[in-house]
Amino acid sequence: MAETIIALIGSGFQALTGAAGSAGAAAGTVAPAVTTTAGSGFSLATLLEGGATLLGAFSAISAGEAQADQMELAARDAEAEIPLETLQGISRRTSIKKELVDAIGSQDVAFAASGVDLSFGTPGQAKKEAFREADRALASDSGTQELRSSRLSERARNFRRMGRTARSRGYASALFGGLDYGATVLNRGNAGG
Image (cartoon, rainbow, N blue to C red; front, top):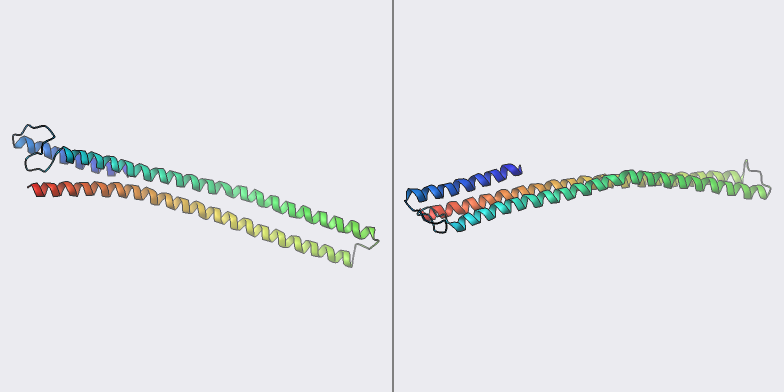
């Protein structure tokens, strides 16, 4: 796409400068490029403006591409965090399970030390409550991990969307700059004719 826009601007620039040269030759004028060609409206200022337009087009496209590249890197960073989030979730759930085992072990030791039968009654209820609490914590952590991973995926999509927008904006800016230059040159030519 960049090559097409630049080729269009460049060929228009060549056509305009070629027209200026042939109009000058037809009029029999062999003058330096600083003077205006008779009746054509072309001058060194016009040629320099065309060069500046071409450089502006390159600059706009380069800026759009650079911003798109930055957005792609940010998207990749966000996607790279998803496996890390998964590992952190596994680690958190492992820690919850370990705390459950430790809590049940501590309860069993305390009840056994006091001479209470561990198979029913208060010790059984305490175990059930500890398991319920651990299940709630595990479910909550799984939901949190899924939510965070989903947000990271959405962030990556948004970065890519912004990159495409930046790239398109650069091409559009280059194209409109070239069209504006062409319209200016045509208006000068019509005013001179």
